[in-house]
Length: 320
View 1 (cartoon, rainbow, N blue to C red):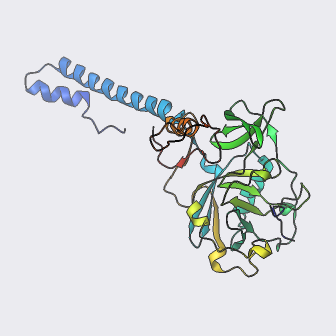
View 2: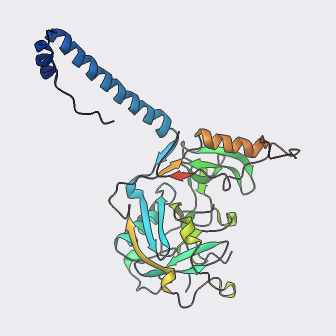
View 3: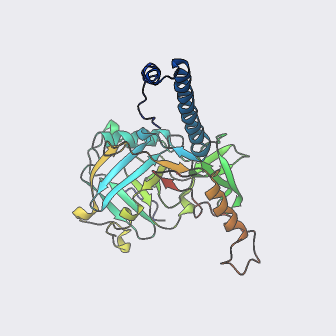
């Protein structure tokens, strides 16, 4: 049975103070003044290092969420790699299952066997695997308690009392119910299931089209794509009359390999922009007020912000 979506500075090396003193003494300069110079130089270097750290703390940490490497996974396909950031806060048991399946090579040589243009790319074994304790059904994790780290961007969203972000991941927010949940924005990664709520086990999907927000609060979301949306857009599509299912997937649909963390050992780090970033604030303000020479009709501004359109950006080289 197909698990469906209900069809819907380092400083340069320094000459030691003692060596400097001996050299300058030969030139008739006191070793005391030389030692003082060396100490001043060391202080200057230390100050520069402290300044650099402060710049990182204030200009990067407060503007970007540094994704822990253990919370990233990489899927290798015919068209390139897809890197995903997992967020255990959203659906901890589903995240744990996904990581374990990847570690045990469950998805190796499986396929994106259901790809619907403008909707999702669904991957896994299409339940062709033998049932086991490691592939048993999971209890749904649709909604979680509201976190104090959640940031509200827009009130009275069409599908939620409020929307915003949790560490750069788009969420819906209901303060009255003390609840939050992940949104189905482009790039969202979630587990597929059958009609019954507690039937997700191994299949997953990635939103590759418009935001299917009708799925919010009804699916267990585990993360978002950091890199590789262009790769996913190249995947072969399945016939719409068959719900996008490809009966005989080719190598072009194959998940060739999967990895927890980065595929290589280059130490590449990923970041997700926080809504406090000036660039995001500017984009959001322009979206609300249309305060840009390009726009001529502003009669309905200020306009509401669609959090899925104004998503926070991802990068491996964060900027201020």
